[in-house]
Length: 195
Image (cartoon, rainbow, N blue to C red):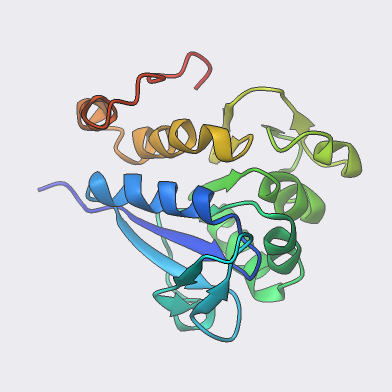
């Protein structure tokens, strides 16, 4: 029996809810376990567009657990809150050292990873002009960029491409399952040419 993959989704007040929900949805459709972790003091979160969303746990509850991948959505305030949280940065560093996938959508690639020099010169993508503010990483204007263990996406409009790309790497021995699910939900922008 294939080992079930397990992903942590890091959320902080102000996160882009569409990016988070699409990612969580696609992971769970593919039988990838997801822990939604609030990086605030409570599981009740304030989202970018004021949708009521609650996390499964607070980050401190699962801080010592090692996941197969860690995902962060964008959202201007959300990524500011992630970036300012020492536990988030320590959690990411530990997963980078363990060679786990680090998956950043929209502004989180620049404002969390590049801002803390976690990319270590790798190529990545992020929202327009954000990469210009940081000297870590090499910005590539593509929908989704994979460089080693780092998987990054441009923004909300590529949420499905991003999620299916992450799934493809997590389910490396079962690409047909990923492809079937993309077809099943009528997502016809898959597979990506640049992922």
